[in-house]
Every structure is written in structure tokens, then in C-alpha cells.
Amino acid sequence: MTFVPPDHPRFLSLMYRERLVEKVKEGVVVLQGLIAHGRGEAFDYILGEQSIPPALEAERVAAAELMLARRPVISVNGNTAALIPRELAELSKLTGAPLEVNLFYRSEERAARIASLLQMHGAEEVLWEPETEIEGLRSERRKVSSRGIAAADVVLVALEDGDRTEALKRLGKRVIAIDLNPFSRTSLTADVTIIDNVVRAVPNIIRFYKEMNEAEAREAVRRFSNEVNLKESIKWIKKWLDQKISELF
Ligand code: PTJ
Image 1: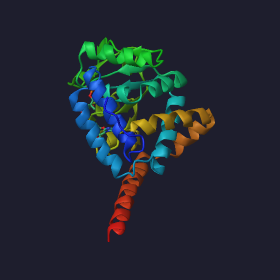
Image 2 (image 1 turned 135 degrees about the vertical axis):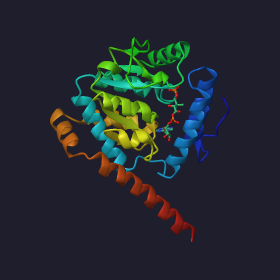
Image 3 (image 1 turned 120 degrees about the vertical axis):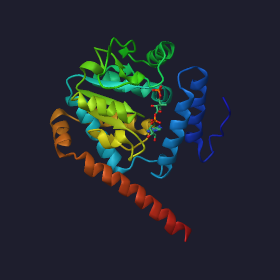
């Protein structure tokens, strides 16, 4: 691993890059995952690399949805497993939602590797051997577990493709999506869209879950509008850009 000086202004961002590169070498992350991460970094930059207020609200509602769900499931891909394995394991144990390995660039070997990485970080329930398929979806993501995504009422996804989000919605599931791009099909289709980096979003969801009771969860879900929240997120980006312009001239 390349040495990154801890006082470097972009230390955290560089460390996450290093981790992803390491995990490419270990066969956990695909090369395409690095491209996806780069796109995420660009959006994160214009959010000021922070959890903006609308993201915090969506994260609290995500915690509420997970609390109220009958059968919640957390979908995990290569990038999220590499970036936040411990946090995913913690969220899974806290909410009782199994982690299901669901990959766009699927191979059995890679799925097994991701499952063991999650287990090494404390995950207790990891589903990675799909027995069934989602109808109306042609990518490898169609392969799901009958004990997991197939039976779930609420699915948390991150760095997701629009096709599967739409397919999950068609099946009547509620979808919570973490995606730094507010314009992606996933962001526009999900029931709760979190415009934040997964490395901040999942710890925030954990914190909100611990602070909340069921009555508060019901109230948070009742008051939430994803459309309003998404517009607020885009306004924050606009505000950040306006501020940058005023600093320049
Ligand atoms: O591990 P696999 O085989 O399932 O493949 C995973 C990738 C990420 C390669 C696959 O899902 C993919 O190609 O994703 P996309 O279609 O590029 O979408 C990724 C989305 O996630 C983009 O909108 C990015 O802006 C966003 N994104 C990237 N990094 C992060 C992120 N969102 C939140 N946190 C991030 N760290």
C-alpha cells in the first residue's frame, strides 16, 4: 500500500482510493468499480464532502424504514464491501437485516470472497448463493436469494444501477438508495434516496437507528417526501457552486 501522509489535505479520500485498489488486487472490487468511485468522488466534491442536511434527513428516514420493515435486506456489492465492511456488519446486526451479496459483474468466486470479507468483519448473516431470479431483469443482479431480496419488503441498495431499482419497485418493494449522483435513475426511482457517500451514510443510519423508537420512526416516514428531499439536495449543490463562484470573483 502506498504511504499517504496523514496531514495530507485529501488524506481520507486518498486512503479510500488505496483501499479500493488493494481490494481490486484481492478480487473483491472490479476495475469498473474504480470508475464508478471516481464518478462518486466528483459528486462528493460538489457536495463539499459532507453529509448535507437533506442527506441527514434521508438517513434518519432510512433508519426508520429499516426499523419498521418486516423483512429488511441490505444489498452489498464489491465497492461497498471494500469501503465499509465493518459498518455493514454492524448495521446488519442492529437491524436484523441480512447482508446479501448482489453483483453486477458476478462470478461465484468473487461473491464468495465478498461474503468472507464481510464475515471477517463480524457479519453474522450473509447470503451469497442465489437460488432464484428477479423477473424483468437481465443483468447478473437478477440472481437473488429466496431468503433475502426475493422475500424482502425493504431493500437498502448502494451504488446501484437503475434497472434493478426499477425491477425491485415493480415487485412492490420499498427501496432505500445511497447514491452520490442525484440525477441517476436509481436516485429518481427509489423511495428514500440518500445523496451521500456510503462511508458517511451507513454510520449515520446506524446512529439514527440507535437514537430512534418505533413511534418516532413512523412519524419520520409519514412526514418524508423523497421528491422534496431530492430537490433540496440539488439546491445544496447549487448553493455550494454559487459560493465557489463568489470566492473566485
Ligand atoms: O461490485 P459490482 O460487480 O456489483 O459492481 C459495482 C459497480 C459500482 C461497478 C456497479 O454497480 C456500477 O457500475 O455502478 P454505476 O452504474 O457506475 O453506479 C454507481 C453510482 O454510485 C454512481 O451514480 C456514482 O456516482 C455513485 N457512487 C460512487 N461511489 C459512491 C457512490 N455513491 C455513494 N458513495 C460512494 N462512495
